[in-house]
Each structure stands twice: as C-alpha cells, then as structure tokens.
Image 1: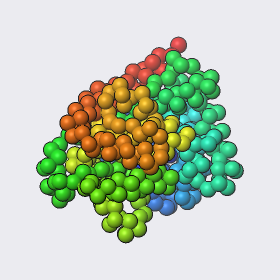
Image 2: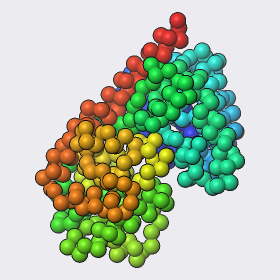
Image 3: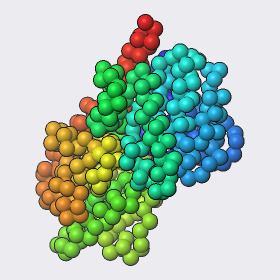
Image 4: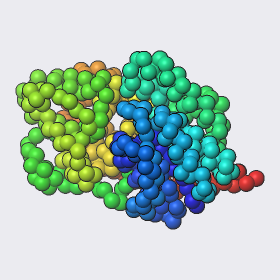
Length: 392
C-alpha cells in the first residue's frame, strides 16, 4: 500500500519521533509511507527527502509559536499543492488540526481513498488548549479549534483513539464503534531492551547507593509543581538518599532548587542514552494532575518506561487505573496531591523485590501490547478493512 501520513508536528520536535518510529515499522512490512510535517525553520521552501525508508515532505509555516503547529492556513494550502498529483491508497491524519484535516479531506475526495483519523489529544472543549495556550486564544480561536477537532471526525472511514476517554468522546459524537481501533503509542521492543542497572549507572556516572527517580520530556507548569512539591516532601526524610533525573524537556528550575532536591538535568539526548537513564532508574514518574487533557492522554514516555522494564509511579490519568493493576505496571497515587504522590514513590522505593517483578511485567506488557511492529500490523489490517468497504 501507498500511505500518506499527515501530522501538525514540526520536523523534528515534540511527539514526532514516536510517529517516525511507528511509520518506520509500517514501512518495514513492505509498505510505502509519505510523512508530511511542518518545517521547523522559517522560509517558504517545501522539502522532500527520504530517510530510513520513509518519504518526508516538510511544508513551511509563516506563523509563530503554537500557531505553527496546526493552525497556519498557508501550511495547509501548501500541503494540498504538494500532494495533489500523488496517488495514495489510504490517508492517515494524526489529530484534526486545520493543517492536517483539510489536506486529508482533499486527498480523500480527489483520490477516492479511505481516511483514517488518529486522535491523540483532547485539545479543545476544556482540554489541552486551556493549558498550553493563552486565555484569549482559548476563548476566541480556541472555539474554532474545537470545531475542527470534532466536526470532521464523521468523515473518517476508520478512527484510532489512544485512550478510552477519547474513544468515548468519539462515540458521543455518533461515530460507529465497529470502525474504531483503540491503540496506544508504541515502542520498539527489538531495538531497545532492558539493560543492567549497575552497568548503566557506572557508564552515566550515577551513584550506586542512591534511589534514582526519572522523568522524561516536557512537562506543563501544574504538573511540574506537583513533581517539585512531591520531591520536597520526600527530601524531608533525611534517611532517604534520592536523586531525580529529568531527561530532556523544558525544565526551567532555579539552580538552588536543583541542588537542594538533588536533581540532574540531562538536556537533550538521543534515544540510546535515554534508555540508559531508564535502566539506571529505580522508578519512572508520571506526575500529572487529573485534568481532562491528562485523563485523555497516553503519554508516549510511558511506552519507553515499560519497554525499558522500569516500574512507574503515576497519578490516575490516561487508562492507568485499569491497566496498572491488570498488568502489574507500577504504583498509582490515591489522588493528584503532592502528599499522595510522594507517598506512592516512598511505597515503591521501599520494596526492591517487588520492583524487580514489576519491571519484568512492564517489559512483558510492552512486548505483547506496545511493540511498533505489532501495532503496525493492526493498522495495516484496519487500512485493508477501510479499503474493502470503500470499494463496495
């Protein structure tokens, strides 16, 4: 099959590496994939290049900040112009932002091919937009974003939500359940595997006799407050020796705070080094407030956590309340307060033997449910179903 993937992400930032990981798995099964993204830099040039079996097309945006990722009408128009002469069997839209859904609908109509829409983020109607954007944007153009997020879902031949809450929202919009595939963000279980904790700590020059906590990627202000306040509580117990590693991300912390809470900021690193830090950690963290946006998410970092065989301490967001006890993936805080989250971390660090068993269960869960090749086969089957229906 010849597949067109459209995303509003910039090349290569944010969640795009996970998209690339997934489409490469599809290409490795013998399919052709063109991935359309927004250019990271300014300018008006459309770029085309091939990398690791994927055909890339990056289109420019003349806007700034968050507007560059999904809201630029010029970006949408250039995507239509750049793809209008190509023939695709299926078009796959990641979320329903204007720069994604408008070209997707054009290709669907022009080539009479099925449209599959993935839903990765509860953006409008009180979701992520209220956390990431200004109040002015949320109360003005935010209403247009909500319209785009919901209205065009009915035009999709198949849908892939990443959480139960997003699946329920789809159903509430009248979308047929038989056309829905609930699928998480995956991980490459062949390329990345659990490693020796002692070897990785020695390589990274991390202390042996210290409990190491790890958080990966960006974090929003309310969630960062929860994390820092929880660490403050843990460090009141002088008998504990704790280090927290914050990998990558946008962590703007005062140097005195970093020193007092024994925080290591790695800066930007590659995936191979990321997995070394995950192996070196005792537990990984998902310190998310129980907002609507967080409850609808599947944090991509969590897929890497379980793939590395690292237990997670989390709040009750995403589908964790069901999956953690069912698959023995870690520890859930009773609520999203610092006291509760700190208590859950303390409970996790207090039972090394249990942590080892949980780590093994995490890896087994990743291999069975999150491997990108397994997910790629599910997607191919979904595309084939949509094609058969489209041809009848």
